[in-house]
Image (cartoon, rainbow, N blue to C red; front, side):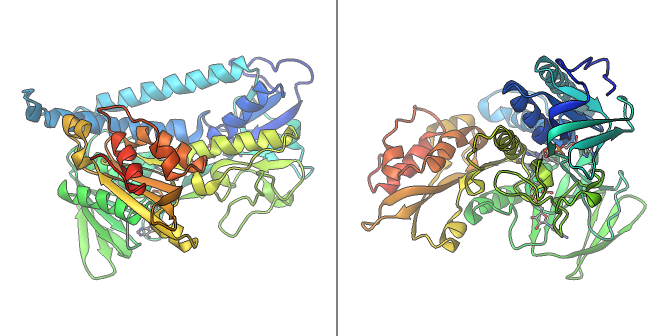
Length: 479
Ligand code: FAD
Ligand code: NAI
């Protein structure tokens, strides 16, 4: 092993053999490393490009930073309503990009410090698993070429962008999230292909900052996995702000022109825009793991197959994060990393409950959910009762000037028609990403409506709407 300047030496002992070797330094990999090291394991982590992975470098963090710029712009543009008189906001996107990068740098440096503090050996290079399932060959990076072995190996190689036929990524007209996060100017117009999490966040951000945005979504609704009524709130809000949302459309190709391009849609219509953002999902990145000779099973869609404890088909090898066929979210990768480490330690971990994970989408209005939507609860065979409360009646929402949105709670229907166990909470509206906590706990603690409604919500807060929605399910309410 060749130690780097930043990571001089593993804690002690043999520097070519570790308790755990991890390939990939994104949320799945670094969570495994930090959690494993804090449990006393000697850990090596191989990363070929940047620690923090997609999340810190070209995912969650930069995307949320640009959305925050959009929120500040919106607040300044709407300041007059509060009697705060300013000139119309201007935008220097170069400053935005520099701010974004400094946040990334801070977080990446902080993570480097944490790994060092826990004595994790970080190797810079591509890691490939050998046919013996214990050896990882490291090559092509600053750490030089070497082989290390682990009693356990965790594959955490993550995912990468993907596109659709006819839309080659050129970085100027046809972009993926990677390129959008690096733009220096806001395009006058943009088409977003795919109305999922990335599509809605970017559509919202670009529109707030002045782009004319069209979303082209193949399915009948945007935001897959989100309750239909909640997705409708977002769609209506987008429409009000001038974002055109076209669902159930099939994009067939595009013809570049002098400026931008014209996208052809199967119904014969076309959309002329300056840039196209392709956000049709991400593909698992197993390309450089060398799995062919290892017997690790990879599915038809390219994901590594695992059991509920993230064990692959091969003894001693685990896989976590975007490279396995579970929700592609940073916090899910963290949770899977911890399950894998606990399994390696023989601690019989509680597997991740994928039906109840938290989901937060940071478009405007924000979306947050945990557990069943009304549709999925019914599909699962539950007899449900549903309650909805809009933020329009919430005093704090009026004060902050964000009254759009609702809280929807889906509960088991009791014989008397009241709500029993809370199956799911889906919300759209002001700061719902920060309000999800108590809904998440209620769903995961399998609380009943009566139990959760007994807790006091502080006044005036946005979370009173959650409390009111619960109370309505008890058939008694205040407001
Ligand atoms: P990654 O983060 O992709 O990390 C994998 C790492 O492995 C990479 O650094 C890669 O260089 C390295 N690697 C790959 N192969 C090898 C190899 N053979 N050898 C060495 N190194 C290798 N999730 C959320 O929860 N919330 C959000 O708000 C959110 N926003 C997002 C916004 C965008 C624009 C995008 C693209 C994603 C977003 N995500 C969000 C998803 C989140 O980023 C991913 O779920 C998360 O990064 C997955 O972590 P991971 O460790 O599995 O993979
Ligand atoms: P996604 O799976 O969320 O959405 C992709 C959308 O594209 C779907 O609605 C799909 O129907 C549509 N689509 C697919 N092919 C199409 C086509 N040919 N034409 C038109 N529409 C098409 O994937 P997305 O948005 O690319 O994000 C990738 C992953 O990153 C997500 O699965 C999510 O887990 C993660 N992410 C999470 C965020 C968050 O938690 N806030 C933010 C951004 C990304």
